[in-house]
Length: 71
Image (tube, rainbow, N blue to C red; front, side, top):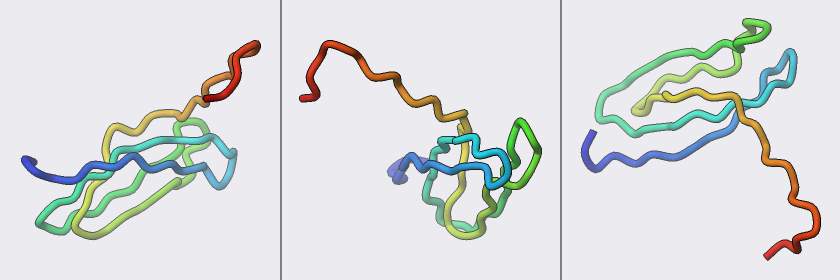
């Protein structure tokens, strides 16, 4: 959708704790959906409104780089 606002949001599975990142997009029409954990199949998030979530990925934090100072 041209001119829409995209944000990245983070969720954790309430059962196994696996983290996920998803892109949230604004829409002019109402949408609804749900996303289940890929490991234990428990509902991680459901939504309804003028937005949609897509591009669900497992959120893998980056390991710290030893020997470098944080900027």
